[in-house]
Image 1 (tube, rainbow, N blue to C red):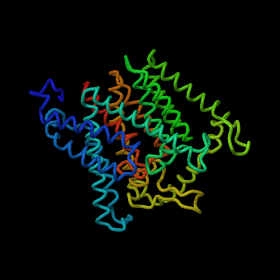
Image 2 (image 1 turned 30 degrees about the horizontal axis):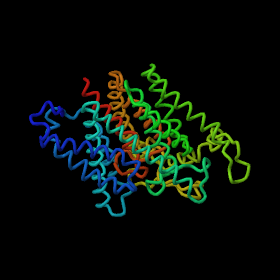
Image 3 (image 1 turned 180 degrees about the vertical axis):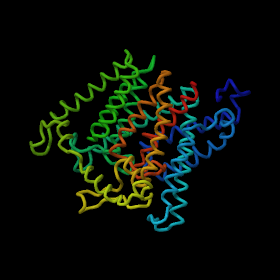
Image 4 (image 1 turned 135 degrees about the vertical axis):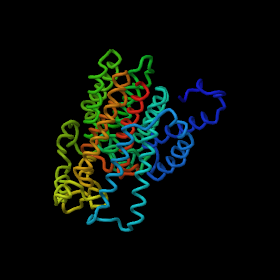
Length: 415
């Protein structure tokens, strides 16, 4: 479809020039979760570079690729969550018209992103692979900078302080730092499995998984375990041994070598077990947060139709000991805002996306299924709004929607 061989004078063809621009714009946007300082810069890039360029080639794309069930169902999910929020009696934003306009804009931007991700997977395999390769490199750059800078800040000690990506928000939350670095580390492991794959991906895998562990994020550990398990089940062959060896090595260093590093503080933490420390933190108050959010769903109608996107979902002291700005679970957040109807719509979208990823995996492309399972697991205990490109955590499009949509696109290409 997009191959230069299929177009006359392809080297100078205006359409191909626009496709290449869109390709690089999408590449920067995907990698942008690791380097764009704030969401506004990220969205400005998406609007002017990805959406605008993509619109220029959209007509040509649709001549050969028609939207299928995934995009249609995703649109129904986004529209359904929006309409459910408008039912009488539900809270409204402070400035109703502005809030409604922003909600519509959020949904449209997400649909444009999903369409772009499907088409990324729909193009030749080397195109999507190049995007993910550069994402890994940019993530590795962010990890190196963060490791060098963060632990030199006053009050930060290695390895006890939880690593933050210093390029985002001048210090991205440790949980989100761990999830994004682990996502890129899993991607590097899959790239290393390719026939003739460079050993550089093993080095990036080791660096990124180490950075993820340095964030002390249990969600990153759990999601990575699921992602690697998917790889073992799907592609248990010789090429997988090297990434698994790197994984075991990083885990061993984290568990047994790092506690031996002398600390400037008191001896109390010296020689402690990182794994035991993760267990000792228990649920970090999440179960209490979930109970509080659940109690706010106080009528049968709310359980069926939800309380809408503008209902308060923050929990502050004294209800719990820390200020939760969102429900910290995309599934609970969807149920809270859209009720059982919203969850059914979401599960339908996820099911269609996973089916496409499964078909791509059976055709020898396990990347998207492993990454999608990573995201689905990570957001059991984190994440917020799946109907916007600008959620508070900001990582849902990268960790969940991108692999699902690209997997659907890849399955269309090979079918």
